Image (cartoon, rainbow, N blue to C red; front, side, top):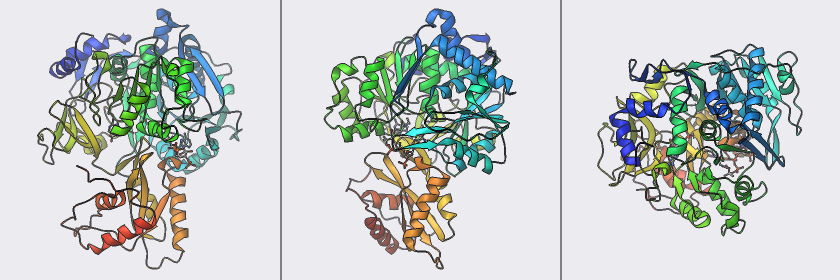
Length: 639
Ligand code: COA
Ligand code: AMP
């Protein structure tokens, strides 16, 4: 790399982004060179490498086969829940992808068409994503833990020509029938695909809808392997939905050119991973981590990537991760802190961890939620490799702040994801948009333009992109996170400024859950708050006020509310508790004091809001929370 340190690269990326990114773009194979590196003609909507043409799948697969890596493993599928392992070399993966791309073409899928994937963690999901990229179709993966209603919302927004799904997913405690959820989603959706391609898994046979549904293997029959279709650098590669502040998810768009450049470089610069290394992001393809670091990043770099269908614990035990590292020689592991907390809970002294099993491991990266210092310390003690907290979000697609190992490791400060990554001009500002002094808390923003790879806009919604992210502080992108920066430039990302909560590394909107609760006929008003949880970081609980004429039994109502959230949002919301209260505490202007209720539930000291309309309500709330088990422990006030 040209730059010797993270700091010098960071400075150069901001002072001359055109030169910085043009140099890195040479690592990608282009069908046509770009005309402009940074295109600001439509600012504040920026584009990268306009005029350029490329194919992301070509850069992820063909380039390595042509360059002599055909026999190297590209993908290892390790599935303790089905007791199977499958390995694919780059040549084999390319063959599967080209044939499935041919199958999509045969069904009329063309460049720019959308393909929704509702898939468990199976190799066919990876094949389908790359096949879309190969023919210039735009994939949109919906996480399997979402309910039919959420799937329907995404189908309506992307209007896919084809949906690819499977008969089932496999959770440790049950087989999840995906196909009935897909059928239900299609019954709810206004927009219908022309076809659904269904992977029948041996654990469960799905019923097929004559004429519409096609078996995965039948779709491949007679399919001619498809060549790569060059697309514009600015053409979308995928749309991935993430929670917004309402129940309506945001369709984050990822382009092809900037994404390929940024991700390939990030593998070396941030993770210090090279071609031939074994990289394992223990996430799910339904999340951004899965898109960026199970699939695109490692394959663009020529690594071997691991696709793990299992959990950190219970499949079969807390030694599962160490077994996978040993069996496949994993060099870099990337997980959410919640996974480490789960392992620590089940095996606090690391009795299932034999140091020889993890001899290949060079670093552990943590992201998805704040890494609490205890988890960091435990990981350090157990694994004896650098434990790197890094901060990013679906919108950016790759890390905003990290200890970039490719430049040599910076000192680790517990609780901090270190300093901004080259390309990101990060500031901490007050409500007026003024930079705050070191160590003062404020909103974390990124000066525009965002670097390549970050969202250029929301799907078919430039106005929503501007209003959600760009208008609060003109010239800046609002991350939605609050925190501070210390005197060494290290960032500390402490909390969200909106109603997003983080449950086991999954981002969920409490507003979305409130919409579900409010739709219950007995509910007059409600609030959902995220309360501290030792394993998952946060879990949601609902506090509801009933209509005066509500006839049902209170326990029946709360049970119904829990069921409704599970049915409409999905099990992944982990919404397991609701309680009935007489009133919700509000300011005199009518704003519900969710933050104050959260402090009571977490056992934190809090300042009585000056504008509260009736303080006795808080006592009632505290009483109700006690009856459902909160606070669990007394913790010191947040600073
Ligand atoms: N399809 C269908 N259902 C799913 C699912 C999927 N792909 N993934 C999870 N679910 C369900 C689970 O079965 C569970 O349902 P239940 O209420 O019937 O038990 C619910 O959603 C919650 O799942 P989960 O968060 O996995 O909770 P858990 O208690 O089973 O496991 C952890 C706890 C910590 C082990 C687990 O959350 C975990 O591995 N987290 C890591 C998350 C992660 O990798 N995030 C990536 C972001 S970087
Ligand atoms: P998602 O878009 O689902 O990846 O969630 C992104 C959000 O998770 C961020 O905006 C943060 O609130 C939180 N997050 C992710 N990584 C970290 C981290 N390392 N430290 C603190 N918060 C994090």
